Length: 346
Ligand SMILES: [Fe+2]
Ligand SMILES: [Fe+2]
Image (cartoon, rainbow, N blue to C red; front, side, top):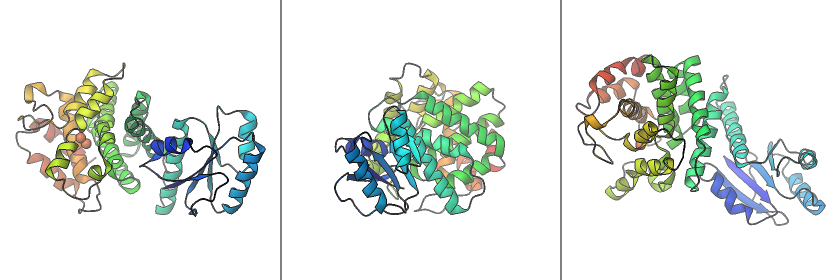
């Protein structure tokens, strides 16, 4: 989705780019200067001092040219009533103030657009809310800021609710229809892990704990360069080495949070470890690998195999489960067996 950012302050442009890219393409325009041609499918985001009449007149001029744009987001400081009223008078379709509100609103617009395009009848908000929480966490990590753990809790709760209401298959279909890349992967892993925990009859707290571990497991990928992260096809050895840093990056990012659960930290760092010691980053062996990590690793591998990627044919759930069964010595056999109903039936 393209965001056309209109502002009166050049200094705001890098901050908005850092917040929204690469999730969204951002085109910026300074008020009073001519901007790039704008596509009707863009979202217009206006951040300017609406107390200045000269600014308001400039915005009116730009908006006259942009009647075709349906979504007009105005950023105002602290929701001051007179300024909010001015924004709506100018044609705002939504007024936001904090970065979190901006990201949530954009995720909702993007989801509604994709749902409308695909003709989907069910536009459940579970996926939009959880995707917005992922956007917020990845943007914070990419920008060197601490994530808000409530985002991980929100995403996890939304995904668990969706699985409970409609089952795993429906969640997998929805995610693969609306999301791609790392977001698709994280949403799928959390759905699979939640389904696994529910199927095993775990307590509510344990389902939530595995769900949060799944939500956060690849947060370190936010710091992996995009050409490597999104490379279509196999990575070369140097790229592979960089990619393999993501569990430690995720661990380092999360351990700065005072409220982080040590079990979740352990799961983030060790979700690529195998029982036979052939995994990374610490080459742990069976006695050192917790149950939470074992469950997460199975969910992660299965979800990665069934992801839709533009450069390879889709792998069926049957084939993906067969692959898990063939990973002799690496995964706990009894858990892989217990996973069968999740993989093939749920
Ligand atoms: Fe990973
Ligand atoms: Fe993963």
